[in-house]
Amino acid sequence: MISISQVTEHIDEQKIELVERKGIGHPDSICDGIAEEISRVLCKKYLEEFGVILHHNVDKILLSAGETIPKFGGGEIIEPIYIVLAGRATKELENIKIPVDEFALQAAKNYLKKALPNLDIDCGVVIDSKIRQGSIDLRNLFKKEILANDTSFGVGYAPLSELESIVLDLERFLNSPRFKEIHPELGSDIKVMGLRDGNKLKITVAGAFVSKYVANLEDYLSKKEEIYGKMKKFIEEKTEKEFELFFNLADNPNEGSVYLTICGSSCECGDDGEVGRGNRVNGLITPNRYMSLEAAAGKNPKTHTGKIYNVLAEEIAREVYNFGAKEVYVKILSQIGKPIKEPLILSVKISPFEQELISKAREIAKDKLNSIDEITKKIIEGKISVF
Image (cartoon, rainbow, N blue to C red):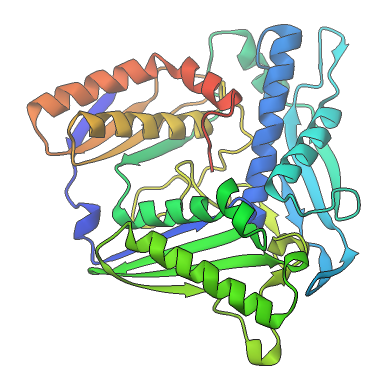
């Protein structure tokens, strides 16, 4: 069933807006990234061996922070980061054993090398796989028409507000390969928090520095100031609003206390992580918008509606917006065991509430539901990010 209704309050009409983005090196994002990498690897292995994506949900990754003593120019690892890989996956089919744990461990290491290039994989982290076989009733859903393996909902909206775009783009700018070539001292654990109070913005950034690229306190402060200047310029090009920018506010140079790490992430010494505690499917945490609390990363991209419907809702919202809407919200609800292309409800809220747009929104929703297989394919290929 498809329902169309009217948006009654636009995001830019709200006095206070909050937006957060946890960068790729944040402990929660690390867990999301590992979970998603394992799922993609398993999908490819299942397809190669059996021609079908078998049951799996590897969305229960936990990171326990290590202990280090970072020093200017280097540092010492006291206790490594500990990562537990958990969830469910098909480990045997038709008397054929599937080395799920082996695939998962290698996928986790490969992801860590990309997200935390300054982490010593050999002595800086311990990875333990506790992935178990899935339940029989859920495995059986893969033998029939593609059925939802959970009762869950997904939400999406378009377009991003100005503040949302600034927060998202700023983190991606700071973690881009080009920026890292110039500033290798800035690690990938970058958190951006944005506040809009009426027509004024306040952007707070926390960024872990990599100790081997910082000679001393003066060098840290100099590099911090240079990065601050580039962030300020970046934001100035994105908005005409008045704004304030804050960077590593917890620093206390008088006491020699600054945000210094060995690998560029707080997960080495102070901050634990878990799948689903960070960014939503659109890459942001947005309390002013409809949000799903679903941990999408690591869930099966073929049958788990908690993942697929969040991506689908985003795609429907963007396409309706591109047709001419001012603002769009989409909610989709599944029922376990029911066909994934037949949700219990697909709700679209649009503005302006005009007949041509209403008809187009309904048409887009139907077309997107019928092309869910394309979403699965894009997720496996890594063309769609879910965090």
